[in-house]
Picture: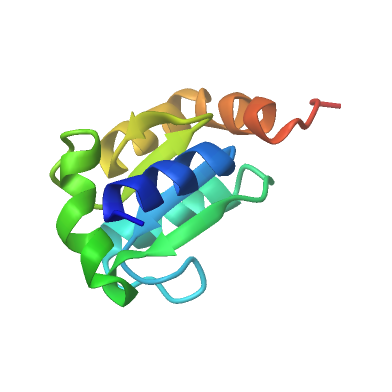
Length: 108
């Protein structure tokens, strides 16, 4: 399978996915660390792809949606953006409802 097809399948088969350097438990850069922490604080499960463990994805993900940096966050198959956009959404209170809706969680 072509790497862009693999990425497309990952994005479309996971309601929420972050492409990051490292893992949420062991991030390998500050941007990935802060983004995954913000997502974890929203109380929903999400998939992640460690781009450092897959050189093909590391090299080709920037071409997938023409976004040059990591991390990249996708919700319901759509690119939300990277660290700056995610943190802005988090600070405005927009991230949690978005992720909860994607995960099928209803606010109590």
